[in-house]
Length: 389
Ligand SMILES: *[C@@H]1O[C@H](CO)[C@@H](O)[C@H](O)[C@H]1NC(C)=O
Ligand SMILES: *[C@@H]1O[C@H](CO)[C@@H](O)[C@H](O)[C@H]1NC(C)=O
Image (cartoon, rainbow, N blue to C red; front, side):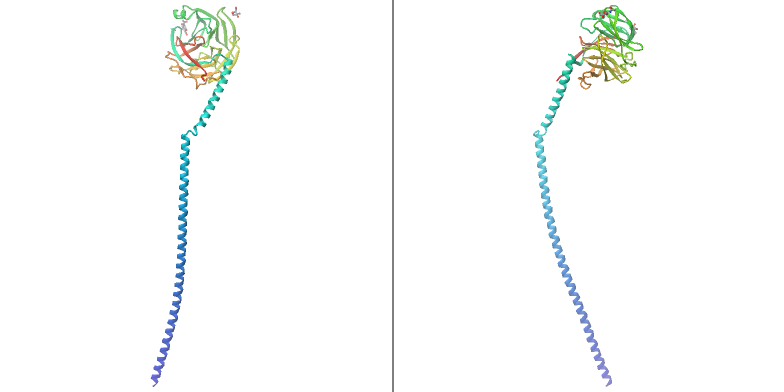
């Protein structure tokens, strides 16, 4: 009996225990269900939020696409406008749109240049009737070979006299006078000449004969220009040339410290100074008084110069090399500024022998009397007008 009670009790106890377990499990299940539903809720919310976000993104992307398209269309529009502008510019250019301005400028410049040149011409014509410049050398004629390697010869550069004068060498006191050029060419050596013994020695190749007067360079302490009248064999005048140093005027003709020249306008002195040592200087002299009227420092170098002459107020300097080649007029200086080196033609001398120790211009004949290695040569010049507007 007692055993049964225990059993029942045990059974009761077991039942109670079982019930408790079930309750516990139910509670747990409920809690889990609650959590699951909470998760579910949250997941749904996340999902919807994600969807919303995606929708926003999509719509924003669509907007971006639309803006991009609009931008592309704008760019296309700008591109076509640029193309059109370029085509219009091209068209305008082909239609000489830009050229007339340039033409007008050129014409203006031409007019101004012409005006300036006409002004210069007017000024120049007041100073002188002569406006010739060398164009080229037309011909040469070798007349004779008398005398030494160096020297000079010239005809009296006045219309009336036809006399020819020979300065043989570079340091003498006698000159040879021929009545005509025919006498000179016919003469055996100096046989047909009248020998003139000058009152003092002449030096170099820088002398001239003008209107029966010999203008010669005497070189002692000073450089003196002596004017000697051939009709009564007397010194009419003399003048000390105001240069301290005896600098040879031409690099290749060192015996000549000063060169005289006659042109259409009168007497010129071509010389050198220590102050302007690298270049040739020029002075205008009065033929009767030997006064110096004006002096210029030219841009013509002394180096490799062999001789020079003056035509219508323009100095022409002939250059060569120490190993003689063809000499050429390579520097000009116009006292009136009308001929520039750029404008002047490069004048080449024809075949030659050694070196031009002198080149003397005769304005009446437009001939150059040249002394080349003892040969007496004439060069016939072709002239042109300084201004050809
Ligand atoms: C010319 O001068 C040279 C020296 O320079 C001399 O030898 C020659 O004899 C002279 N000739 C005449 C014809 O005077
Ligand atoms: C030489 O002649 C010139 C001009 O004919 C004259 O001026 C000069 O006085 C004369 N000289 C002599 C010394 O007669």
